[in-house]
Image (cartoon, rainbow, N blue to C red; front, top):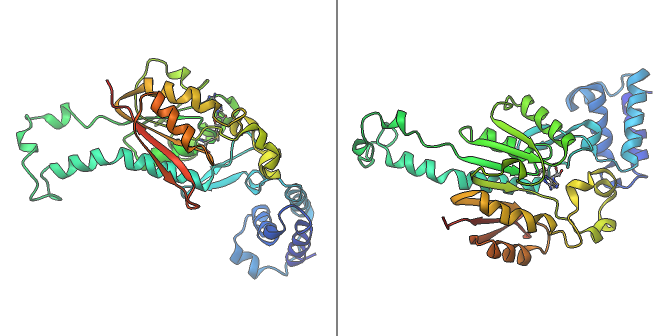
Length: 317
Ligand SMILES: C[S@@+](CC[C@H](N)C(=O)[O-])C[C@H]1O[C@@H](n2cnc3c(N)ncnc32)[C@H](O)[C@@H]1O
């Protein structure tokens, strides 16, 4: 059989599965994955014969997909924030909406640096006020801008922490997960991106591994699906993604109840918390922040207009 014939056969098989609409794309993605070539190569070689171990492997992958396994677990890779992450069924597949959370942290972490730059005289700011001149000799070496301390709780594949480490090279990052197998994947992803030195990965429950430490920003995309919603999830999510990464009690709020007060204690005065939240959770999340004495609670909607990111500040000392 030729590559074209294999592709057509795979598409027909997938059309009988739970994701008919994606059959053509999935058949092609998996074929390119097995042969290790790009689409242009495939178009030029569509009439080549395809047989042997690779063809058997392709048939096996198509069967997994037909049964509803996410394509990212089958290829072992997914894209997030323009980066490629290794994923297995030990970790949640990072979602595009979580990129809003990363954007929010970058926004929170950047204004200080920008303001300071604007205040400093230099080739980029010839007319800037003489702030630098009023500083004592040797100020820069003795008082560099302190690095921002960021904590990612429930890091999974490490997607958030790694994207932040790349975008904020001066930040000090700590990432925690209660799953040892997820942490192994996250560490591997950090190493692949040459960030093993920049991120400290710790095992444990919520903020327990960093008891007594202080942070400037705490970020988390914790499990937030209500247990009763289990049956309404797609087969891909329900039967393949780790339950530990998805469910949080009867109302989906179990983790937030513990995480929000613990984060308040661990934040330095002036520090911020940024959380991803689920559909319909805005009122409860607002109350939990208020009870924990957070200020300036704001919600940012995702592209569907659903409040997706909650940000608040610790003002009190
Ligand atoms: C929804 S996933 C998010 C993963 C990753 N942050 C992302 O956005 O792709 C939630 C993660 O929280 C972890 N987790 C669940 N309960 C936890 C707990 N009590 N303490 C620390 N991590 C926890 C899970 O193992 C999972 O990796």
